[in-house]
Image 1 (cartoon, rainbow, N blue to C red):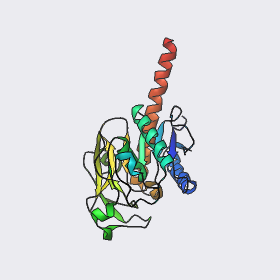
Image 2: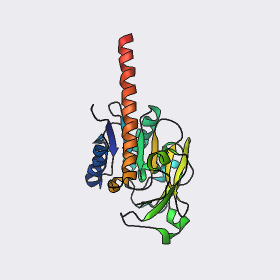
Image 3: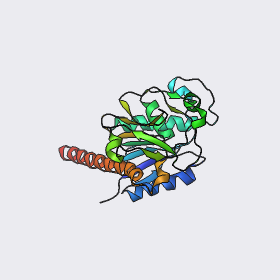
Image 4: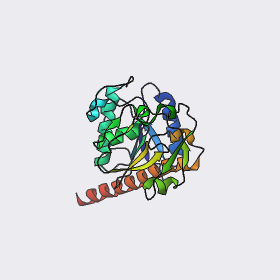
Length: 237
């Protein structure tokens, strides 16, 4: 059986090294990726899932905020990813948000961001290494707990912004030991999970691979249902 096709958005600056790593995680867990950058259409007719990757901060104009400390913005990417997130959720296409992608998922559903999260939660707690040094606590009875288990885990969270007000239909599925939101998820279908860390760098850890495996499984189910629906329509035509 062919692998589900997952659209992957990345930064125009760092995508050359991030996309192959995310695609490796998809391949290991049964999927395959296609890079989806600025300039491509915002329709997702031929893909089975969506990953919104990490990168630059999200422009505060998307959620009614004011330009503050954000130094690296990409308005074209902001616009594309918001359209993609909204389209995916409307069409029941599974979504995984990574770092910035988690924040975009929240914004697309009407939430807001704390632009200077480390001032809010304490600059002494900021970690700048890609190594898994931050401990997060997974909320019980969440999709993330079913995917990766409820035990605390060490992750590589490098973000400067964080979820502030939750978007519609979302709940918190993990926080770090300082109380900052580190994962969010949609309560109902379609599958939509956002993590503030970078599981693509932790492909050696089975709990992190499980996140990609859950997306691929949801994408496979979506594709099967879509193809069955299209076949029924052809039969009725």
